[in-house]
Image 1 (cartoon, helix red, strand yellow):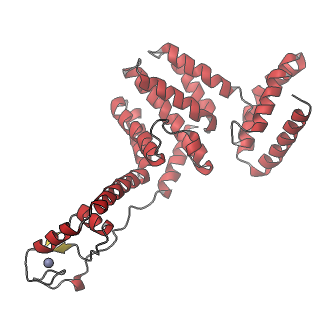
Image 2 (cartoon, rainbow, N blue to C red; image 1 turned 180 degrees about the vertical axis):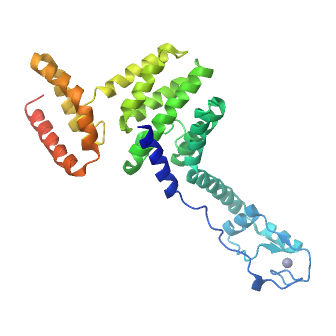
Image 3 (cartoon, rainbow, N blue to C red; image 1 turned 30 degrees about the vertical axis):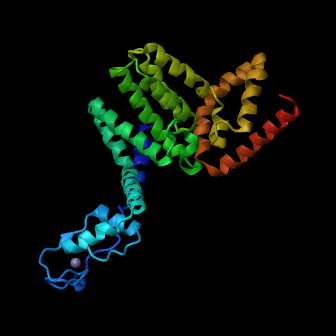
Length: 311
Ligand SMILES: [Zn+2]
């Protein structure tokens, strides 16, 4: 499980995008020594146009061809910046900072994990919180915070896996330093939200179970564990096949298990052996497309029959 996760981090790093190229650059041929390149007036005192001024000018519709101009040209530029241009430039600058953070978000995570392993918890906390803040800023959802549904289906499983490990670490830190706060409750709630979409949920649930004894806020951690039990008792094979924990087929199969199978002795022993052996089968199926697809259609057919038979 842990190895899996570290491998995933490595892959993420390999895919990370290079920082933005500057839009233009100063070329030697454009510059005549001792003259302002913009107005051609004689001067030895060229001033660098600040990054934000440049951005504001571009957003105001002014063409900027040089990095440095004379003081008078700088004044002229400042007069040409419109209110809207300045606003747009501010927005753009914020987005660029966010984009840079987004591209480096895996570093926040790695630094956090490394601090965590060195037991420097308050510092680790900052990096983990920043990681969540970046996601929330990108998905721009103020009240609800980040949810699995906001992440595209292609990335949902990966991001959820990261989130679950990170949230468990945050639960651990909050419980250690501020066990009575809303922060701890929030981290627990979020962990429950992401767990159904995460890879290797069993490992996280086991960590939670083992932590109950040591926890300061025992009742909350115990409640968290109880909430995850429902997920743990889900159908492993069906969950592996369908990817979506709340698909119609899964709901039908779960109802059949709870309402029909558990009523009868044979059904109960089937459920018992099924849960004993299915996780390992599920792990094999999950990553094998050629088995996954036929199993998926068999289960779809079974759930279709169950609906027809009114289960
Ligand atoms: Zn000039």
